[in-house]
Amino acid sequence: MSGWSNWSGLESATPTEVVVPDSTEAIVRAVQRATAERTTVKMVGTGHSFTSISAPEGVMLKPDRQVGILAVDRAAMTVTARAGTPLHVLNAELERLGLSLHNMGDIAEQTLAGATSTGTHGTGGLKASLSAQLSALELVTGDGSVVRASRTENPEIFTSARIGLGALGVLTTLTFDVEPLGLLEAHEMPITWAEGLARYDEFIAENHHCDMYWFPHSEAMQVKTNNRLDANREPAEPLSKFRAWFDDDFIANSAFGVINSVGNRRPDWIPAFNRLAGKLLSERRYSDIPYRVFTSPRKVVFREMEYALPREAGLAALREARALIERNDWRISFPVEIRQTPADDITLGTSTGRESIYLAFHVNAATDHRDYFGGVEEIMVAHEGRPHWGKVHTRTATDLAKVYPGFEEFLHLRDRLDPDRVFANSYLRRVLGD
Ligand SMILES: Cc1cc2nc3c(=O)[nH]c(=O)nc-3n(C[C@H](O)[C@H](O)[C@H](O)COP(=O)(O)OP(=O)(O)OC[C@H]3O[C@@H](n4cnc5c(N)ncnc54)[C@H](O)[C@@H]3O)c2cc1C
Image (cartoon, rainbow, N blue to C red; front, side, top):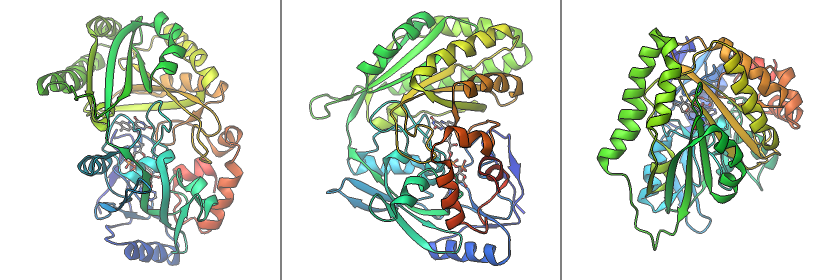
């Protein structure tokens, strides 16, 4: 039996059976059979969650034959795709059609269903998560029913199933709001910690998208802003192939990978490496179509914890995290990433009902994360933080009920759509209860 493990290598599982459904009917049959046999069934994505959220215990469904665009509606400006389509495939198809998503995270390897089910988000914009860009979805529920949901059809399902954690059904199709393909101008600039925090509100107010990185053990920060250009007037000025490879592949992956493996053997060198990295950061500007600006390859394998905090608490929490790092003898080689999102209205959305600042903490995949993540997590929790569903955290259903006003509502919907818990696994038992 082939096993399952996630991208970071932190989680693994052995399903009882592997099925690669080629149609919605095949998914319905797999769900009904699992219910009849009192086992569980789990559709996995590409395993890019750092948690065991997609770990299969019974039957594992693989998304490989659930790929492709099904419909383009230029009047409504929506595109419907099969739920297992990788984000990079959707992006390339949209480019061909002269269309684009509004926003996305740092990579494009995930499946659409996997990314939306955990609330995968970028920074800034009018909508920050992929889930907030959904206008309709279809899923197979616990009794094998095929249900459609949108703001007008089964709206209570739509409100929750856009970030369903894989607990409400197997998604078969997803309809995204799209916009005409335009250009983003990226501006990357080294700044100091003091300047970054002092000018934070200005960076958010004056740019469509803003992403910041702080290099632990140093005063160095990098700010990255992305702004929409008028595609009819502005010719794109992308990075040359060499510069793109040198900065985003060689420096960000190959050289960073070497530094990380040296740092794993000589952790005492990490602060000096980080201070050097801060000095080597340089300013650059380029423009390109959105997905080439938002996403880039990540080849150095890591573990990550990310919390969404109320906007007004975010910078205080960041200052406390820095003080904690400095009080301990941890050696942190990865920058802390700082993003911002507008509020959304998704029941278990990490930004539901509040504008948020996201703080993301990383360690190399070979590093024990528990002291660092555990210490920082206490700060995040004290500020009413909500953990990213796909990233390392230790919160339980009891904890999470306190930070999600709609938590009970989600549990009721779960009881309705999956009364027999055919989609359950140990992660869902921890974060939602039995
Ligand atoms: C290098 C890297 C960079 C990342 N960058 C970002 C980022 O910038 N922003 C961010 O927010 N996150 C980021 N993430 C996290 C990542 O986007 C999420 O964890 C996402 O869920 C991964 O998608 P996946 O396809 O791998 O799904 P998986 O991790 O395999 O599954 C996630 C969940 O989706 C469910 N699922 C999958 N398919 C279906 C389906 N058809 N129906 C119902 N449920 C389904 C699974 O059962 C599981 O519950 C990053 C992760 C990595 C490793």
